[in-house]
Image 1 (tube, protein in one colour):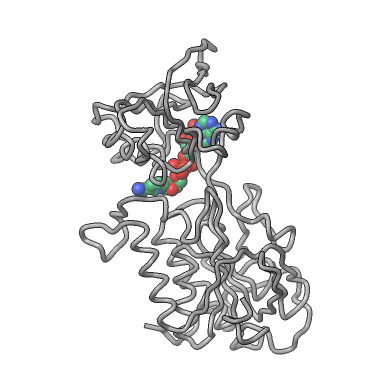
Image 2: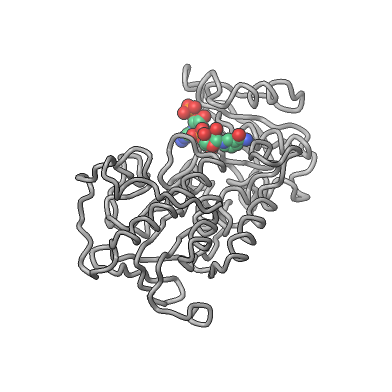
Length: 353
Ligand code: NAP
């Protein structure tokens, strides 16, 4: 990292590499803040680029009349940020100290970076059912996945019966994607109606290769080297049933990626970062901002993530311009006294377009 990081004290460090992070980087770079981005080291269920890397066609990001793939969109955002001088490394931040200023961040590469301001945009990670065989087969590549778009086209899933768990938009998207390759897709949902948007649910219900097991939960994943069947339980009657499947795709939502923060920031009850002032990205620590899915448990869209990334960069710029980092004093732990009407808390008058 030191090769790419000429200074040991950064004006703004951005943690993450989804739409929120890259939009923050674009705005910060154009504001001459020379942003430094920790893109993430990548793992089996999370790769730099965030959740959009697991999406096929993005049809609702403005500006792409014919849609764009998630990978293309993220590659373009990243390239745009780098074009304006953003520096980025494929490392995680594993520990933070926000009680001192400049803030201290430790990376998975063993480096320590000082930062005048920080934007946390680490997104959210896929959830699992928590069944023993599910985890084992997911780790061994035995046909269990939380990413249909990554794994669904693999040869051993073709012309097979595949199960998707969940009733939200992700489950709908996964089922429609898998139906392109599979013989049959069975959606297992714990209730008798989908949570998904009407348009996605309608598409699923109109697809002849997809059927739904309503009011069912998975109680056991069967299979030695690879998955062979699911044992289901009816949530109304308690009756047990079994379906033979060659693949299991879990699409039951996400958990915000905040573990590396410890108790450095206030979190909401559901684990998302608390941003106390409406329409602000300022966290409980002045100078630390949060953007995207790690703080948004409501909209969770690429375009809203990008919007909050923009907001975070503008707020960081404003905070620094008003001397937030000038005195190297410990950051006050409580931000509840922030008055959104104070001039210093208003968005900057400069517009980086
Ligand atoms: P979600 O909306 O939270 O849905 C999660 C689903 O999983 C729910 O149906 C839930 O059941 C079920 N579930 C949760 N825990 C479970 C468990 N332990 N066992 C069985 N089922 C469980 O999550 P999401 O589908 O990932 O979507 C997240 C957000 O991203 C949403 O805002 C969504 O609109 C958006 N999104 C949009 C698109 C698109 O527009 N193309 C695509 C993907 C996601 P209950 O319904 O009973 O709670």
